[in-house]
Length: 111
Image 1: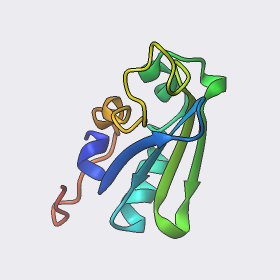
Image 2: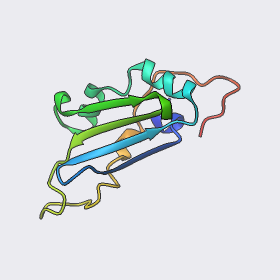
Image 3: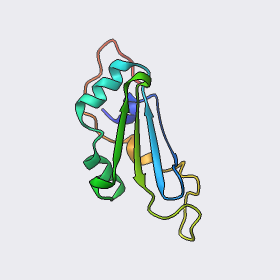
């Protein structure tokens, strides 16, 4: 399945002038746990999507809110001359198609 099929939201924003942050939220703890346990949201996978080094990727899984937060360096400083997305709100798109090796339960509907 794709991450977009499992998450209730995936969004991005600036985390200061030099970092981007991604929030991936889930409707329930079981779906969150399936994604975490699959290992699909990894530093290596995110690094490949954003063409950065895996050691530059920070991933935080916060079980109480069934949310994953990812922080990476921005490709260019926010507001710089090469900037294409000042607020960083369009940078989540590559995460939508991230493959997550889980199957939906037959009784579980996906987004």
